Structures are given as C-alpha cells and as structure tokens.
Length: 428
Image 1: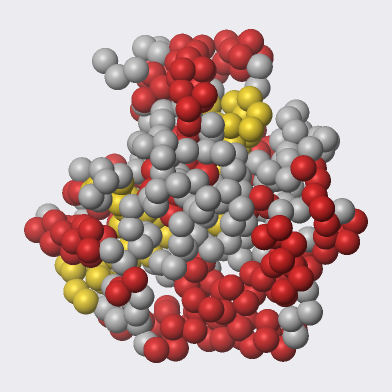
Image 2 (image 1 turned 90 degrees about the vertical axis):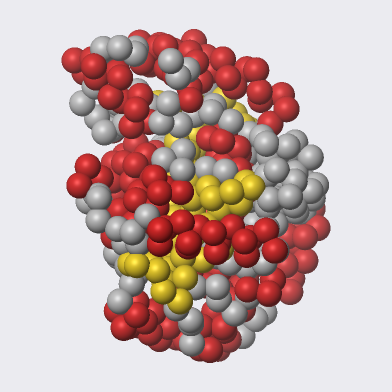
C-alpha cells in the first residue's frame, strides 16, 4: 500500500472520508518524511511544531471531512503571510517580522480544512537570489525558483500541495525541475492580499502538487474557480505544438521530450498541429522584464532607502538600475501586452486548439545552487496572464526531470486543466 505521505491530496481525502486513513496518520507520515529529508533538501524556513500539527489533524474524523482540503498538509511559500508563523521573504530585513493575520489564500485554505505545516523557502523577495534549497532528485542541482521550497517539498513527498507565486516563471520552472505538476492560474484568480509583491501587475499565486486534480482542487478551494469534472474528461484535447522563437535556446533533450510528448498525445487521440506565434509576441520576453523591474524597484524602495545593507548586492543593483526608469517605457510595455492578449485569444480560436504545448524550461535543472535557472519559456505567458500547467514528461542526460507546459486562453482555466488532466494520464 502507498505510504500516506506519497498519496495525492485527492487520494488522501478519499481514504480519510472512507475511514481507511486517519488525518493523524497522514500528518504523521508527512512529518516523518520532513524529519528524515529536510537536513538535505532544506525546503522549509519555518515548521509548525509537530505536536501542534498532529493535534490539528486529530481534530478531524471521517464525519467532519467536509472541507475541500480537510486535513490536507499544506506548504506556504514564505512571501505569503501566515498569522501564526514568521514571514521573512528570505531577507534579513524581515527576520523578526510576524504578521497578525493570514494572507487571503491561506485563510481560504484553512477555511476548507487545510493544515499549514510550515513556510517554504523562497528566493529573496521572490526574485533571483537563491535560498539554500536543493533539488530532491540531486542535491547538487537547483530546484528552480523562486518557489524553491514549495517545489522541493512536494517532489520529496513532504506535503501533497504547496502555494507558490509566479512573476516570470517561479511556479512552472521549479515544478518542471523537480518533476511535479505546477499550475499558474489566470492572473488574479487567487486573491493576493497578504502577499509581498515583487510586481503587482504580474504576480500570480499558484499551486505545486503531484497531480492536476490536486492543483485544480486547491485553486477551486481558495478562489472559487469552477472545479472541472475530471470524471468526464475522456475527450482528447486539440493541441497546438508551439516551439516559440526561443526554440534554439532549449536543449536537445528538451527538444526531444517535447516532440515525443506531442507524438504520444497524438497517438492517444489528441489532434496535434503546429502553431506559430506572430513576431509581435517576441517583444513580450523583454517587456515582462521591463514591467517587473519597474514595479520591483518602486515596491522595494522603502527597504532600499531605510537599510540598503540588508538587501543582497544583486537586489541593490537591480533597484539602482531601475528606480529611475521612465514610466513611458513601462506604459508602452503594458499597452503592448494588452494588444497581445487579444491577439493570443484570436490565435487559439483561429488555430482551433484548446491549448498550446510548449517547453516548461530550457533544460533540466542546472548544476549548482547559485542560480535558479532561466524563465525564458515562462515570461511571455505570465505577461499574457494566461493559465499554464507543467507536467513531468521525461528526464534529461543527468537523470533530472524535464516538463512540458500547456498554455491556454485567459480565464479558460477549466479547459486548460481538463486538457492537462488528460495529458498527464496519456504521458504517464
């Protein structure tokens, strides 16, 4: 029988409601896994006391498993407030900070019965400066970022679900590097109140899990988005194979895995066709960075002015470079993004596809912990505000996971999730 900590949230809920698994046993298995593996993986910056977590789990019984996430252990990225734990943003500036209330998404998850196990490691302010987390598949490699701890904790079966955030590629890329499912919903789906913004026009709260169903369930519970009827998801999707203009930046292994995935999905019944993006979309890669840098510099201006020495050298340099960026550059980028969102909706309709199939990252996780990798295959979709799901699809030459990404139209999350659910089964 599968160990409780290796169950998906959906599987664990079914067993607990049937009375064949107790909430306490599920929590105990997760805590045992954390004790065994955390010294190497270093996914957590703060953990709830084991006695407290177990006490909360014991409060559940099969008759009281009504919440959508009842008794499910949850990791929370440490840029998202939890009123009973510190929130430090991986910055000494906030070493003693303890918010008084939960962020909106945490409050909603708890309302549906989730038990917060702890705060997962983030890069500094969810930017580029890494934390100590290792890739659980090989500790000499990065887990990706900025949702480093969330991806590693889920991949290592410490918890079934965890919150992440994405400004460029911070949910999709670490999920791909760690071999789990990552879901960045349509921009604005989950309320960001109580989250430290890096870029308020881009930041999106997402979910890392080991199944598409778990991602959908968590976003449904915390946002009210419709939960797809996966039981009826037997209709093969229409898929557009989209290599993008950055195809030459992806490794040979990524090329092979994406093309093999397209072939497998076609053989299983999906209608797969090539779809190319117009040249207008090429500007989105740089425009995402323009908007992110403009908002980041202003959003962290108070910290920079008050105690610049408490910021990393990289963060200080980025603020200094962008604090005087002309607003006209930012406005031009934002206006072009709005135009491309309309063009993208037309492209999907005219191409008669439900989703695009595209790389999740340029390659498997790079060696070393000094960088979290490149968001090259994520920034454009984030700026479009589009829903994205990454699925494990193979391994690279170092034996590390490589994912493929499904991208859909803005606010078409149900179609994207149904397509991803079908694809995950077809690729497994």
